Image (cartoon, rainbow, N blue to C red):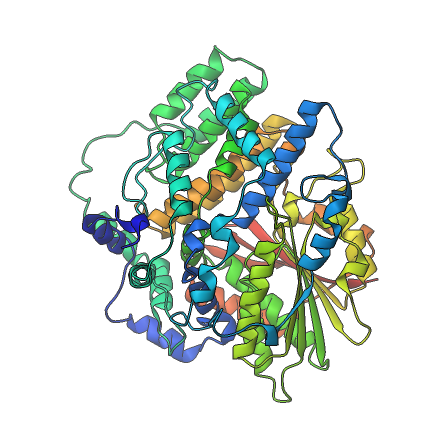
Length: 634
């Protein structure tokens, strides 16, 4: 057995299964839904098969989240320049680490196109049980860490010694994937170092299959599938009913009622006033007594926000955030959590459905389709588009995807973006869609139109979903990267520009206002998970700790360029895009109606989907969280 799974006891496996409801017979209501409203490729298991393929790669557990690494690299670079008393260069061409002049040829090689014909079945198989020998040689498993990054991590380690001992940010709890508790950060680092040196063994495939079975992965087939069963059980609250049934008799004592929201806002005001040892410390003590990362939604929210407030009060927010980013979470775990997320809430799936169907309809008469994706990450959106294009009666068009994302640290900044292209190429080959891919790993505002190699007879689509919030704005940079990227997209002159945003107002320069807006935003997210997913669910804890908790920490405890969580509202983005020279376009009524029907049929009743002028908005209990729009050059 792979040493990484030795700590995964039978008891923990049983607990893992308990919190993922597996109905032996699908509910009758589910069958009726599937018969009356059969899922097309955008709501089928296509994306699950794609994720399954990624998870089955032999070295996936050794890989960390791409977005974490790219932000970590930027933070490290800027820290070194600050220590040296030099100004951080605005362009990667002046960066000696990953974007130096000497790397020009290497970067050009890393952005070469990948044709389908160059992908052999021996190195990658679209089947989850196919040959994976090629992936064993992936350089990610033996990726060398640059000396500068190593020194930075050691510096963070030294800085952490000056953090008060009671600052236990995102406290250590038992991880089912490891099967034991980590009580010391050094132990975690040592464990990660040992793990990265281990070679995958043949028995890992069977272990993986068992774990994938537990997280409800499955190949494409006739509905209802395990994914739809999980989605329906989350919608109907079946998993939570099982949880409540086992606890009913123990909760007879009276509990002290505490208004955690008022305490948090009052504490934020005290922190803003700089009251280090007086009111703020007392309020933090009260919040800690009534909060927990294992309690209900409000208690979990209060726990993470209190940690962020304490980090800001101590002036250690940026150090803690960097240490959390450098403390890797494997892409394997991130994607398991992603599966739970798309089953529990419709935000991502509905967005992909609307985007892909709009692209397919708009490009119907074109034989060449070029999609430029800002923030491609793992490319979860595109397998369903590839499958949809393959169903065209006249035959699929030639598809080109240009994947753009932030570079990752190391000597191969474009490696992850290129791996995404190889997976998509194999998927396109399976569906016999002519495919070409180009990877660009640069800061978005430094991309030039010439690098995109746009051809005259192409139908060009620019896609940017929910990642523009990480671009800096005018409060930090005189020349706003947000406006630079929008102007770049205008120069591209696309036939269609689809833009998705996180609707948030916690980008205010005044701390108390920002904290209050962050409280409202994250309250909705924690409440949503608490209403749908059982509290003991390990993937839920991962989402809350690694995604929501860290975003809250960055928004509350970090400032200037170190604060990368900068969402804006629908109105703010609307004005920005209009100024860049775009005209908003409506989504087709049939597509919108079908999206409405999907949300009402397959997901919890408290999810909201509506239209705000020409924006399609999604949210929870009346609060708008996600917004989607389509544009054309004016």
